Length: 194
Image 1 (tube, one colour):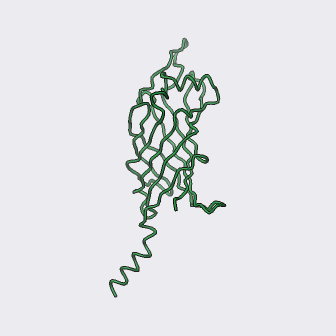
Image 2: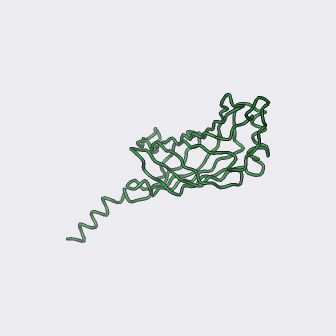
Image 3: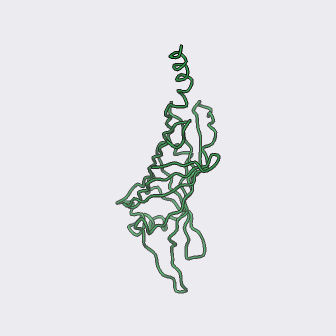
């Protein structure tokens, strides 16, 4: 009898214990950044190509693993000359470093559907630890094709100098052409693998 009860418990709890895998949907995911220009305004841009997975356990989100790859060549600030300069060796050097990656190492719950995700960001050939503040995931929804989807928003701030991206010019009136702090916002939508 005891064995039967134990088997019943395992069957009932199996979905919560089973690993689920979510593929990042690039069509519904955006990776945006903002940086100060001439100390007076913010320039915003995005990377339009992203791929990755989130592997996790419904019963224990802290065991999840996030892996993402962003195509640096897909950078877009809506200004062709600026994009060309940002893709050059002065900044992202996309010919040498065509991708940046993020791999999570630790996930801590800090509130209702709020997490701190610590991981390694590799950008411009340099790997540094970064903490993402995550709001989500949302409650899963089924799309018209029967796929289960969920989303989240993540934000972080990094210093571009930490990743070896150092180009700037001093301004005559003081200050610099390009700020060092980069604000990052990621809106991600994932599709659950069957």
